[in-house]
Amino acid sequence: MCSLQHPRHSNCELGALEFFGQEWKRALNLYLPLNAIMTLIFRGTSILKKPGVNLYQYLVSTGRSTLFLSAYCTMAWYSICCFRRFTGKDRMWMYYVNGLLSGSMVLIEAPGRRLELGLYCLPRAIESLWNCGVKWGWWHDIKNGEGLYFSVMTGILMMLYQKDPASIHEG
Image (cartoon, rainbow, N blue to C red; front, side, top):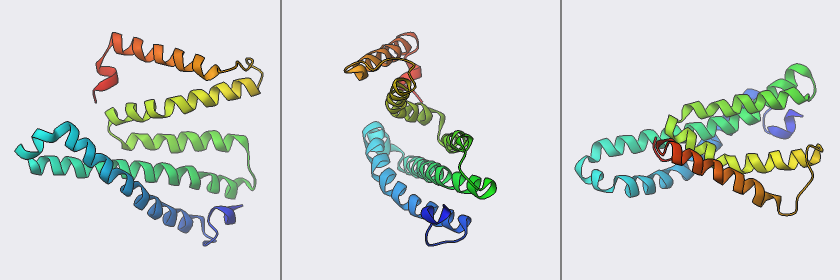
């Protein structure tokens, strides 16, 4: 099974290192321009006053985000490979542990960024929960049900913002 994940390497670790390097390049291509735009938008006037400080913060933020995404993808890919090697086959628990391990890579990011990433992932997580609930018989499918869970989650976000605005937009 490992040969499907890393066909160029018989060694899982070498495959993971190569994958990490490739993912680092892809993540850097994403975060360099994204963080540049965010820096210009949110620190436009500060850039002229303190260019060195802003450049340093930009580089640290870009490096941290690139490391997060690269580590997240590599861990998601590599941990299953390791589990298979030790157990000899796939087991359901492997995927739960895989999710915990790869998800823990979010700790690399700054705390404020973690909330943003969580909010970014939330709609897909809710959609997945909805679809699994229908599949497992927890509830019946409702035509245009995504509108229902979107409304509920938007209401929750609005309630959070009303109670503590800093919990949504600061960090």
